[in-house]
Image (cartoon, rainbow, N blue to C red; front, side, top):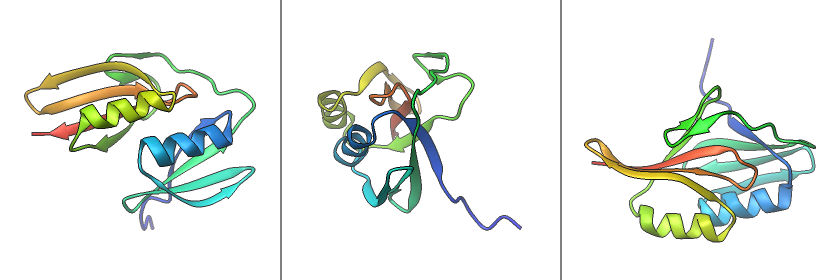
Length: 120
């Protein structure tokens, strides 16, 4: 029987850079940091980072990734979060206001697609 979500993870190429980005830009806390696996906590959800020699990019557009899941994080200050994401190597793909909320789509330094949303 399924008892919950164990983790959601992204492949990364530079463990130190990724840990810095996910902790400093996205505010996650590091639970463990091993050469083969990093476990982070995002408000009770475990996020994993898996080091690989090469991270394969999936097709993406201004709405997000095509062919893989996209982690969407809730934000109450997208402007402030955007500045921090960019200062730590994140690339902004789009930002827009919709009837359901304000959304920012971005890549981490390895090109993994994530989103921020401030729902209305």
